[in-house]
Length: 266
Image (cartoon, rainbow, N blue to C red):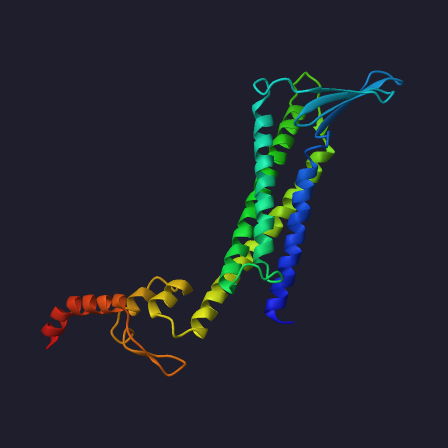
């Protein structure tokens, strides 16, 4: 199997994983069991209290549920606002990452050239990674708040436990982080290899442009100013390419700087 086919299948797998993770993160918003506390007053009567980012609810043995929406934004604790903001940021970033991933994938052929597709894939991976980190931060912060209050012996109010929404959110965040990380790694490698192959297959392009696009080492800019590098170059079509104005300018600067040194040697 060719390397291109392997990369294409990996991109499809990462895209499916990221979309599934994004769906799981979105599914945590309507789930009511972010945290819960079951209090049994007797054998026959018990009550279950649960809440999420939007309301507090209570149910009894008969199954009647009484919910109360949070009355005011100003009266909420800071961690509720922080979790809301980061989760919505994660959802928006995940949606943008899905659009970029569909454009930059090799199986869709919507992004244009190979270099453009590689850059779009790298951007999609970074956005997916940021989306997963935002979601992981929100669920971890909320869970840490619950665990801290549960383990605090001085906390005398009702103690709550971790709800099912947190575990669903952690799973979705992990899929986003893993998929975005693999996307970023393969997108970066593909961008570098594609630029290198582009410069190899297009020797008729100007030397400075090819070097800038191939991202050579830092010291390589010293060699492209040498007169031997700025002489006439032969293309694949046996045509001589006239040096550009920029190349002539660098040649003049090179001769001007090194002329006193050449005279002193003579």
